[in-house]
Amino acid sequence: RFLVGTEFNRGIAKLADFGLAYDILIYSRQLPAAIEMVDAHPAQPMVLDHIAKPTIRPGNFDEQWERDFRELAKRPNVSCKFSGIVTEIRPSDDGTASGGWSVDEIRRYWDVAIDAFTPNRLMFGSDWPVCLLKTPYVRWIETVGELAADLTSGERGAIFSTTAARVYQLDLNDAA
Image (cartoon, rainbow, N blue to C red; front, side, top):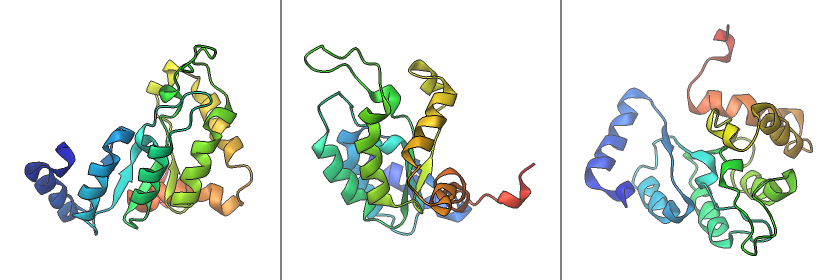
């Protein structure tokens, strides 16, 4: 419950003085506390990292994650990074799946994220080098590209570039 602590929230309030966004790095079980913290800072730009790290098991979708995730997405000052997903994939409860992964295993999480946050508040995140525990970096980029294939070029541009540039106040014209 650190997210609702007095000292922690005093620090969050100071970020506005510097025009900085706050990245919320939590597990899905901490989403209710994150909602409470975000509600205390409605003007503070925030980014939910790794879609709140749901535990992903083949054949076992996390319904509580979806409810809490969608509730947090109702806050317009929060954006979300689609990252850190593959390292959260676990073997199936019955032991029939080894913990490897496929695009189809994460597609439902993508569908929820894109629906809840829209491309204008969802951004690609690499989670490099941590992603290397489960997949080569190139495969992760290709996976998100495949998931985003049905979006318009403008929506893909938002996810892979302009959403992050806006939230983190980056000048894309300054890129070397």
